[in-house]
Length: 467
Image 1 (tube, rainbow, N blue to C red):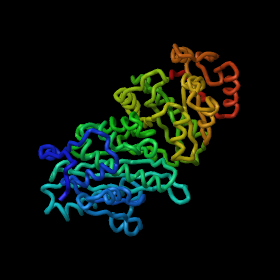
Image 2: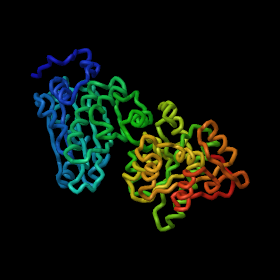
Image 3: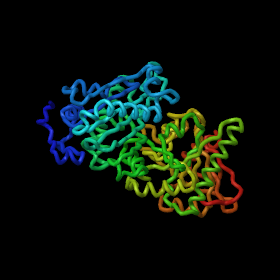
Image 4: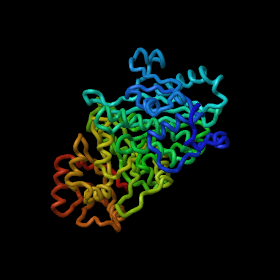
């Protein structure tokens, strides 16, 4: 029998599938022990790729027999295939879902008859590529949980894609252990709001050590959750460096959208979402993709184009955009059949760093002249090397900027009220190209160098457009 003296568990709260716990911050040790001492929770663990660090917490804190029905780690590929079937990548959503189905089915087959009337079952699974011995892989993984909110209730699933940022295998294993305990605890005790759930999930491990860049879910526990809102929330709350929105609706993590691909990013605020501006945005991105195709030649794979939007404020003194505002802009871009990357940071060098995690192929930004002027005028005071360090980071790995021309009148309107001092330009038939932008030295010398070195490539168009 479990000792329930430090649980505030009532019959009425159990009927609702919720447990009321003390309001103070609970560390991972207390979370695991609380679950072990809760007479209603019981489940299985299947972990591949980072030890058995989640199950380990429940085994070391005491009273594990009250929670752990089974723990398994199928490292050998033949063993894993025998359990979960062959044909899928071992670190993939497909493999995770197969694991979840298999473990859940076994759990209910073996225990539902005897324990189903008073037990909230769960199955925790993960498949992870932690840092290898040579340090040559991209540490990431898939984590899943199926659980009941009440005995005999319908199952609820939540699936996460994570990136592990610790520099060693042992630290990554430790972080996975904490994340797994957080996930199970949050599912049973912190589901009142998405904010409380993700705060519990992120405690002590997310952002500095683990990023969560994709979430999917199903079941009545998540009936009030909206998928697009949750993805945007991951970035807005600092849990992800970036998330991906697909125009087809089949969303997946950024790694699957970017992996080994040549990429064109069209960054911007996209605050104007009317059809006219939407068409302009499409023309801008299409011109960038066409330019990279011409640069790579016909024999190369076609590059992918994406709009890139930031959840950060445009300036330090400005407020950050709220999630409904971000989603309105994203929906406007998706309506134009454009894919979108939503970034946590606004600087182009931060976008470069993330994309280069997943591809060594060429990366190009296509920007209007007003955004180009902002990027050059920023002081980058958060970097020790200021503007030079920002440019070095931006162009470090096969990166160039395609500069898209603007009407002179539109450029003047776009920079109205902004402190872009020292910039002048000429025009041809009312249209301004990157070669016609002038800025006083010493910044002007740097601008001319980037043009001459082909880091900054003017795009030529036949007809005037607005940007």
